[in-house]
Amino acid sequence: SRPHPHPHPRPSPLVRLSQDLISRMLVVDPLQRITIPEIRRHRWFTDELPLYLSVTPDQIMSQIRSIDQDVLMEVVMKIGFDRQELEEALEKQERNQMTVAYYLILDSKRRRLLSSSAMMQSPGQLDVAAPPPPPPAAAAQ
Image (cartoon, rainbow, N blue to C red; front, side, top):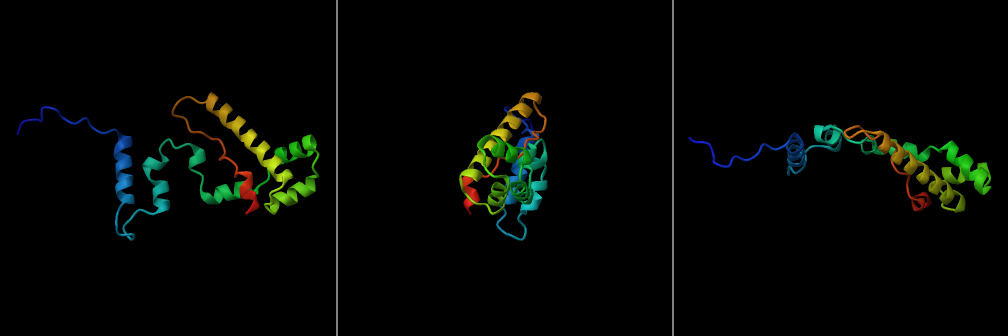
């Protein structure tokens, strides 16, 4: 048998990994289909994935619930809200002027950190920035 006159180029490792992952996700039998934890451990999902994308939902929720003390003090000092009232409103996930101000400043801080970490990285490095905060509307739920 002679070689094909126009051999197909070999797919890149990324293409092969994505094909493997997608084929395992599309298995009809749910007992044989790849699970979400398995997807999160798959090489396509883990190789060079930015850290903020590899954070689990539980980690995101615990980060949302933790209060950034620097941002809290900035809201208290610059805007003049009562610290205890603001902490209580954040813990109760209320949506009011205090919590909206807090989430806006938190978002601004995280964007600054993200842009400064992106500038300091060379291509191929992992992004270590935190996930974005929930929108202020999410605090009302």
